Amino acid sequence: MRTARKFPAALAAAGLALTTLTACGGGTSGAGAADDANGKIKIMVGGLDKVIYLPARLTQQLGYFEDEGVHVTLLTEPAGVQATTSLVSGDVQGVVGFYDHTLDLQVKGKQVESVVQLAHAPGEVEVVSNKAAGQLTSPKDFKGKKLGVTGLGSSTDFLTKYLAVKNGVQTHEFTPVAVGAGQTFLSALQQGSIQGGMTTDPTVAQILDKNLGKVLLDMRTPEGSQKALGGPYPSSSLYMNTDWVNSHKETVHKLANALVKTLKWMSTHTPEQIAAKMPADYAQGGKKLYAQAIKDTLPMFTEDGVMPADGPATVERVLKAFNPNLKNATVDLKKTYTTEFVKKAG
Image 1 (cartoon, rainbow, N blue to C red):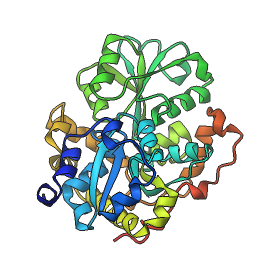
Image 2 (image 1 turned 30 degrees about the vertical axis):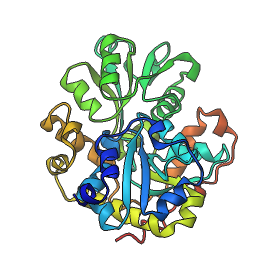
Image 3 (image 1 turned 180 degrees about the vertical axis):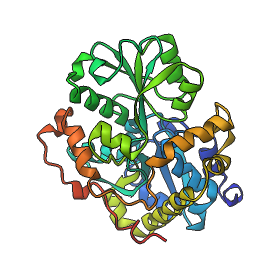
């Protein structure tokens, strides 16, 4: 890749999947403008090896960021809530994470917007351990259970609470446990420290392959989202501080071009072809299992990066069902996303 010659630091950051917020620096509000002036952008991903965020790394692997003249460093945090913190503190210019954080941040006085909507379904799966399968057959059985989420305040936490409340279980009647994803989630399920939980591929594929549990609720498709949440649930997105977007439109347009080009590429290639472009260490359960994980998750992605028309309203309804910060708050949904850049992408 050209990045290897010209931008070794960026490639190292992405290739090694830096995992600590401290690696980004101390968080100065002026960092974004300075980095952009040098043609370098830092994007924090809420789990770089998760299939739900695959377009971010795939765009880099395909060379589309460089084709647009933007030199992107991809960093990673295990949960979206931590990625959001790095954006608000000014350590990074963008986050690839769930759109629902833009609503949560708005009521806290932070104006953040989705500029590329990568997905129109959550891509999340509620699983249950084999041992607990008899007592945990639907969200109605969440009461008294310990349920895994990537992080407290994360989108998996949000969705778990919504499913509970929707099915008559109050949020204080079960215990969300922050177990991350991948091996930490698998271990928690295997050891019985959680009875079930919400996670994504490739973790889901590994749970089924190792026979550690079974699927309770599948939201990897628009149909699954409709059944569980009552509508499309825009999830994975590139979101950024609105002020930064408005003052760096040319850069945002280039980022949107690259990501939309990737979404279109994904729609015309097989899961095996997509898997072959990704780093080898992402396929921890083997190439075949990783390709299957991609296949199962592909329906969640958009092909054009455009926000689904009724998606924001679904997210608002879901969050207001359990989140006291949003329950009586007025959210200006039009300020939580923009289609300005993806509509011009090409």
